[in-house]
Structure formats: C-alpha cells, structure tokens
Amino acid sequence: MSVVGAPHGRDAGPGRSSGWEQRRAAVHDRRLAEEIFASMRPPTSDPLRLRRRAQARERYLKSLDALDPETLPRAGVALPHLRTDAEVAAELRRVDVPVLVAGGMQDRLCRPEDNLRAAAAVPGARLVLFQDHGHSTLLDEEPEPLIDQIRLFLSPTDANDRPDHEESSPCL
Image 1 (cartoon, rainbow, N blue to C red):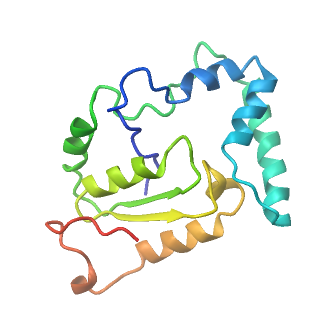
Image 2 (image 1 turned 90 degrees about the vertical axis):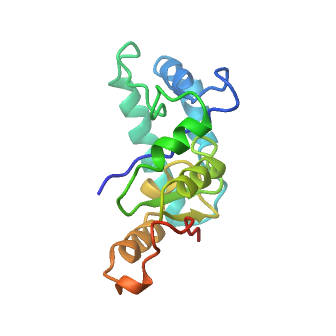
C-alpha cells in the first residue's frame, strides 16, 4: 500500500503555489512555520485532538530544525512534468489497481476538488472526504476514521460488489 497526496490542480496556472516555497521559507522563519501549521488545522474543541495537535506541532517544528532549505524535497509537486489537469487525468486513467483517495474537506493544500479530480480520473477509485479535517490531521490528530476507511477498503468483498473499472469512479 502507498499513501500519496492527490496531484494539485494545474489549470490555475504556474503562479499557483503548491506551498513548497512557503515550506522552504519556514525553515528559517519560525513565525511563518507556526502560521503554516495553524493554517492546515480546522478549529476543534476535542481534548484528544488538541493534545495530539500540540504533539504534532512540536514534531513539525523540530523537523524544520533538521532541514536544509536548499535540499528540501519538492513536496506537493506530484507528476511535475504534467502541465494541465487534463494531462494529469490522462496519466491517472492508466492506473489499474484499486485506489482509495482520502482527504479532509478543510484541507487547503490538497484541496477537496483535487482529491475529487484524482478519484474521478482513476478507474474504480473510491473517494472519502472527512468533514472536520485539514491537511495531515487524519494522520496526526484523529487517525481512527481514516484507519476505519482503509480497513473497509482492504477488506475482502464479493467480486460482484467491486466496481467494474469501466464504470465511473464511485465517490463516498
């Protein structure tokens, strides 16, 4: 199994930042790093999520201390050789394995429309969007709903229950 982000939209043009430039600048600018972290998190009053969020914040800030901005990988630039959403969709249509696309409705980096576009392009893909989640909160604040969906996706099913790759992609 592999966990990857949905390719970002291309049709807004090359001026649309993937966030990589900001992450690179955040290595030396703690205020910017704090802003980036906060911008990826929707409001919550859940005590467990708040505790996990504080731990994730500390891990994020520590990870920046270990980075060299000159060698920072270009995260968020999946399939960089493809210039338009149509080119990305054409490439994704070649995927011939089961795919679960999961994301947060409050994610401003891997936006819901990017996830929808990716799921619609991959034959037979399943899309699950979580209402009260932003970028990475399903991994470091409240992973349980995502784990449940992964288990459901990986659970054996009757062959008749699986969508045919010729059908359009079902989205939950």
